[in-house]
Image (cartoon, rainbow, N blue to C red; front, side, top):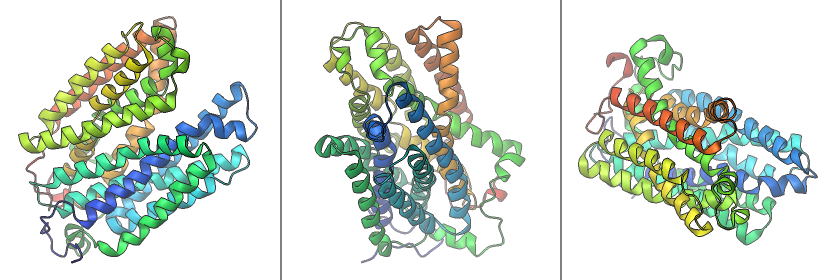
Length: 422
């Protein structure tokens, strides 16, 4: 029988329903594409005739275009999700980044590459928020944590698959084509799901929906929104700086065989750990009936692992990669972070929040790198290890304070409008 939601409150008690499956597979392709670029960046640019330092410079240009697309797309899809529905955004975003994936495999110039990374970024921005919103509204409050755990766990495994696919094909164009085909195939599952009952109820009301600016016009709502963003910042410092630049850290640490350390492999190990971290944090939050307690535990563990990683002098390359996996496990609270954001706000702006928050965290990477560079170059004379420890500690403190100020949402009934619950 087809899984669907037809009432104002969650009635489907089956955890592995169609909404969860489609959201999970959509996020899988999302992460596949997001991390694939980092894995094939060097080879793809060399194939386009870029050499030397220009590879780094053009790579930064392409990443910036992708991130700009994600910031713009996060706002666009979030608003549409509350105005037009979670389903339309879920599949609109999947279609867009699938087409962009295929187009990325056809580019012959850097400018064309940049354009399609921009389009891919816009498409990638919508899937997670729409999927998590639909899942949280489609399951009873006692089970929605399991649903979001499945989505996040299946999704982040896309990074591991992206690395393995590249190892098999050894052709960056084929890797992009594979991602595009997977996304298009996923669209056929649309017939198996229907819209959230909560959204249907709000859609029939006179409530203002998808009002992005309302997040900034009310003090209490704005700070709640800001706190949701800040609790996720440590994740992208670890992935975007420590793991992405792992070859540089390995060299300074004197890792045995540091010249063999590859960023793509480090990313794969990190995301493997993240998969298990998402499973652990999701299950623990359900068993303890608390999002905040488990997230605090992961924040502390993450801070400890940053210090361990940046003091791991003279270890072997194998041990280094194992540390990358444990580091990934320590930021496995990604599922809790997104779930908390979805549970903090009313149905009429829930998709807007859940879609923009993770994209603002991703988009904060340039600012994180700027802060890290300041400590590295201005404060510590190029000491990347000390700068990493200071920034890691600083972001931990900020995230811990932000989490402390947020309310516990495990038992929250999500069937309400934000305007009447300030």
